[in-house]
Structures are given as structure tokens and as C-alpha cells.
Length: 362
Image (cartoon, rainbow, N blue to C red; front, side):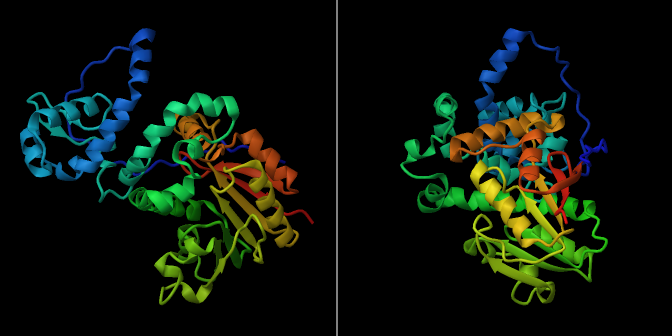
């Protein structure tokens, strides 16, 4: 029987917020709310500018004014103050009564050294190509397909790796950061009682697998992904890495075949490109697995209330870039059940991921 757990999702560890006098803000009228929404690009651009300038890294635990920060990051003081003022309205930095600036929980997430840093993800979501495809959203909605080839003359990933090398590097760093941060949450969530072999299918560089192997010393694991991806696997899993003796790395496309035997298969964030690849991947897992094997599908959901603003925006970006889509709970249950898997329960992994715990029927 499928159940949706009401267990609250864990939240990242809190960071220190320096005392500052908040500006009292009344709830804006609908006309002003709409004005703020249509100027949303200004907010995104402000976050990108702060990340590229390194403002959050320059600001330490001591309040600093715009002049001091401008000297540290190499800008003019007046426009930097304007940037900080705009960000402070969103809760990114805060201004003290004497005109200096301090960190907030959100501004600390733009620091490179923060364990929950979103700096690379903030840059990735505001890369130059994003400003070129967003204005074509109406076209994507009319046709139901990606506009990226029309804008750039080639598919998203071909463009990224052939024409936008810096953006590709930012993409890789952002995906690595996100994977590393969620890997520990996945390892904490999964009960591996009775599991001796785990397979991370489409597992990228293997951060989830590495976290599981570190937590369970008797566990053996397989990482499967495309050749160019597993070639950059987590250092713990290859060469002279600490976990290499318990790791098998398989280069291949899970949409074509999954030549891996395991007690538990993990499929994380790879079922959002298109329905055909989703169905093929799930069918291949069922074909590879023995009866009774467990399958855990982990995805963002567009109907997850706490993170809907984030996931619905990512859903639209997927449409623009590759014609893909984020799943609702219902759509993912349908795909999983249609592949022949039995869903035991659905549980939150963290504030933006859910795990569908399944079994291959006998």
C-alpha cells in the first residue's frame, strides 16, 4: 500500500544571524506584488552579481559598510551599496541602523566556505543562456518542446560542452555541490537491513554511494553512469580511494540496459527528461533486479508545498532546455507502478527531495 509520510523534512543546520533592525514591511497590495514579480529578474541578477563579486566571502563576522566592502571586492562604493540594499530587501544581508551590513542565513549561503553553500547553484541558474531562453517560455508552452535548439542551433548539453565551457564547469560544480549535500541525507534516511549490495543507477560521480559505503562498512556498491561521468567519479571510489575495494564502476546508459545485480537500486534525479527515457530506465531496473529487491526513486516534486516555488521554476527551465518536466506525486507513482514496481511508502529526504521506496514483486 502506498503511503505518504507526514514526517517533517529535515532542514539544513542553521547559521548565525547577526542582530540587525528589520525594516517593517506591510503586505503589499496585489498591484505592487505583481510589480515585484515582474522585476524578479533584478533579484536574480543581484544574487548573481553578489556571487561573482564575492561579497558574501568578503563580509566576515564584523559589520562592514559599503566603502569597506568595495575596497575588498574591487567595486565602486555607491553602486555596491545599492546592490546590498536591494538584496537586503529580500533577506540576503541585512543593514544595521548605522548603515553597515551584516550576514543573514541566506547571505551566508553565498559564501564558498559554507557547508550548505548555494553559490555555484545561484550562478548556474543565472548563467547568460538563461536570460536568452526565458523570454521564449510562451513558445515552449504553445509547442510543449524545448526552445534551446532554436536559440542556440543545437541541443542543451551539446551547447554547454562545445560552446559554453565556463558554464559547463559551473554546471558540474553546482551538480556536485547539490549531490554532496543531499548524499548525507539519503544515507541517513535509508534502512539497509538485509542489504549487502547497493547500486546507484545514473549516480553521477557517486557521492550517494560513497556516503552509504562509509556509513555501512560491510556494504558493497556499484556506480553506473555514462562513461564521461564515471570517469570523474568521487576519489573515494576509484584509484587508491578508501572505498575502491568495495566499489564496482560500470560505464553505461541506464536507458539502454542495467547490467547490475544488487539488493537495493537507487535512482536519483534522472527521471525528469522525458517519459520515454523514464519508462525505459524503470523497465531496465525491473529486468535486472531479482524478485524482492528494493528500488528507491528520489526526485523533486512540483506538488511538494514547502518547495513548490523552487520546483515549479525548475520545471519550467527543464521545459525550455530539454523539453523535460518535474514529476507530481501522482505522475511518478503512475510511472513507477506502470513499470511493475510496488511502492511501499513515500518519505521526505530533505526540504526538496522525496524518496519512493519500492519492491520488485515476486
